[in-house]
Length: 113
Length: 115
Image (tube, rainbow over all chains, first blue to last red; front, side, top):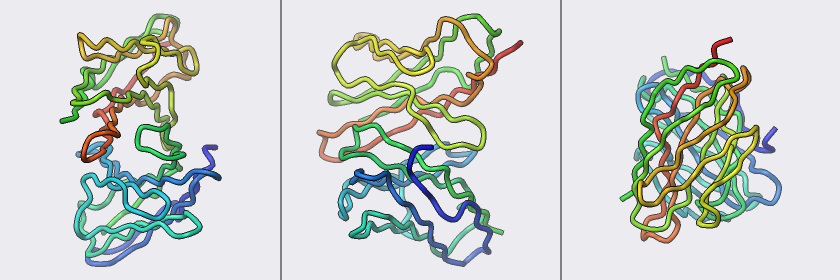
């Protein structure tokens, strides 16, 4: 158990809809990272937040957004969903910088029908 | 610019024989390099990490990796494979001091262990 929690575990929705994925980091970690894992694109870094502020950005679509709250939990919002957004979404946390060891949550499996 | 290439998408070895998973990287700055493992239907777990200290890095479960700057490689090895090593392995490079800090995962190597 990494200490990172993600909810929900599974999510099934329809095209055009909007969903919110939630992540709670390990106690003491200030950074949260979001990743998308799919068969065709592999594991892609989406975005990093550090202590409430966006710190690094990867291949995140404009339809996706994230935020980190004062209690350090984070949410990833996915809107105008397409079939291709079906994937496993991981959250990870670390003490601080992007070069620190990251601890991964169990993931949220999103299915868009 | 950063990049990471895992040279084998699938490696199959017999139990008790050595494991070699190959990774080449490119980086404009002094990178941090990682190997993570993902067991089926699980999140990723850190195996080991290089951050410009010793070039030979020891990790968990008997794995180790050697950083070779001249070859831009960071291959993962284990002397004797165990059935529980069957999983997907990811080589990762990250940079903090560039103008746009990023992290890049390799495409993964699936390790199969034959009894």
